[in-house]
Length: 388
Ligand SMILES: [Zn+2]
Image (cartoon, rainbow, N blue to C red):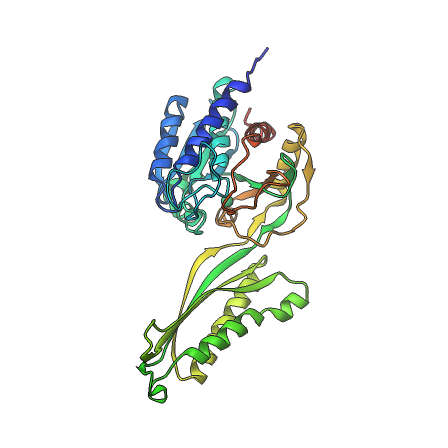
């Protein structure tokens, strides 16, 4: 008969989670976090450790005795923290000014580490398990870069899953949804160029002030007809700048930034086309040059039916409550959509407490009580997929 001591690994995971929390690194700079995980996994004797995947990403590959006689399943966590000052003052508070794990990625990583510990007691029987720690989730760049890496493509995963904690929902409740789980979004940078002049002779320059104020109000009204039709379509102006701080000069250039989002790729493309047309028209009418840039692209996260059905059975087997999120789909974005463009998969939500501060709030801290819940879920999922 198998015996397990779930307490010892959980205590170790709490320590690890708090260590990761104390030394956060922003997107693209996760060198220390990846090194810490590498150190953790080497004694677990994985078949392979793939470093520097899409940046500082790490994939830890565990083979069963029959790796080709079963599915290859990837479980994904994120390495990066946020460029936000933490306000909580617990013992494991961030040791780095202006950087903190305020999205719970520290907890997501620790849960995957727990999966590896579980394999030591109950090894895989069939197939292959990949624990993927992707970099730069918060900027939307990491998953895309991992997907472009031939070493990731060679793994040829049959399924990819991610677990994300969700504040506002009861602790440990699993939140499932088929189809779009969260919205896609893309950042638009509009640069307008006119001509400076002395502030005493504004008529001799070409200020983009009027064009900028038009864009500030007109951009956000672009999707009004779609919103009225019940479609999730949103344009949010996030930043604007006009000229320089110089009281003797009329401004010669302006920059406006907005985020476009929808849960439907076609709607997102439509919004992009509308924004391009608007910026072009306004610039023409005001006699300005206009250049556009697209940044921070997050595809719609599409949960595949079959993957959600497997997750549903796993949650049941793990004895966890299952809910549907009340905000469906979520308006925020996740770069997991890059994976589900290639591979069957799903993001699964897990409630991190009804009174938990929101994701990215300065006082957010991943609740350690969620670590054993995540472990139970991942364990059951591996079982459901026939890996042991
Ligand atoms: Zn996150």
